Length: 353
Image (cartoon, rainbow, N blue to C red; front, side, top):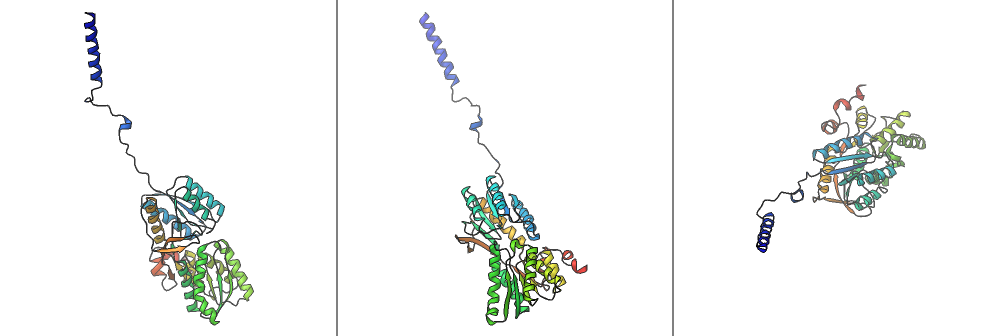
């Protein structure tokens, strides 16, 4: 009797255990069994700028920010204002913050190679914006054709002054664009120089592109030539402004044609009043839009093609070079004003004073 009771008891335990492990019973879902759906984080672009002390670069900053955000990405912008060590430090902070791609406007074309190296160690690609980074494994370079800018300046000036004494006020020696621009200028001037028609009586770089340094250069040019100057080619509108101030100090403003570039508001205003002859307009909105599109695509791992290459001393860098536009009093309204780069009210403001 006892053994029968034990058998019945064991049978009940077995049936109970079987019921507890019945695979047909629904399971309570566990968190680890459920697929996790995440919202994709927006692409983050770092933008390391040389400076915001010039009007032109303030426009670049705002337009680039707008273009990036219109593409659904985010951008973090820093500016070193001409300090190489600070630009490297700022770029390192951007890299460590987990950006997906770095865009850089180098102050020093050689020193910023270290930034490219550090970014690559973190698996981050780098685009050089407007200015080339030298001797680095740069991923992309997008700019205007800066040699063509110099050619446009020299062509405009030689059309006005085919013979005479020329002064060249260069940009910063640390900026590759300044070298490209000078190459373009002298490619046009060289035949005139060889014929003896043009004499370059002064040729100097301008530290950090500042108007004050350009003015000092121009003062020296006036002193050393006793004012015997027939034309001035300046590397941009800021340096042209410094040169024109020196000419004004000696009663020579408006008497000597001056070329610049960037189509800064002050530059085009000087064209209107006659103290500056021409500038070269580089539609920044086209540049910022192109860089933004390429940066976001590269950050997403998409294939980006470039139809040109530029040697930076280390490699043939895939490049996009946009076309500049020569501007003088005759086409001012159909270029910078019609494009909305400057308003007519702003451009003609000084001429009405």
